[in-house]
Image (cartoon, rainbow, N blue to C red; front, side, top):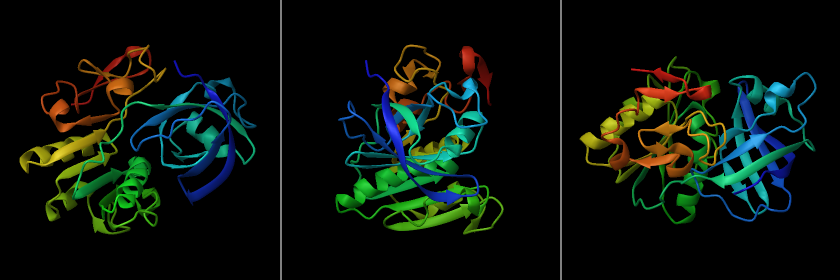
Length: 267
């Protein structure tokens, strides 16, 4: 089993009003290069000033980028732990476990990427890998406002924007942009209602979809079972699942499990 590795925060970039990116340099023990769509468990052994022990538990975060010896994570302020991560400064020490889970396949010839909010960071890593293989990805990015569009200037290829309030790009949902495209694979990460619509579109248009799911995770290594969807563990069988795995799901878009395994129906 993988163990946490100390990692120094060496750089902060991509600042927005709702979050930014952290570049971490893991110490010894981190040898495997992550694949796009994989994640890490991140914890704060020593919380920043003003935060208590309640922010020390590890949380899952998608990999937003990788350079030899450096790992990039993009954090949005969604609660106490993410706020504590955003309060960290260069030279602070964090702990990371990973890379974990199954990522995207990279088997497209005409890739279409669709991200909502903080679902954009793992797609940036994917787009960069696809571009390195000679492809020109098309990326659709959505958010409630233009402040919630992450990394839009960093994506290779073509980028289209949609915002709920019309502050940037198309006034409406990012899924509204799907009908303008004819990919062979749809890669997507973001809020589950968006993923559900993306899957419906892909099935209706005979396009394979690979969707990066978000579930509450207490361990990230398959022990707690809280991240279950149907009979699959998102931390082990995912977080990226294919359309053939989700097409007949009884829980996708309908059920989530929260802390302690509490079941909440979303539809």
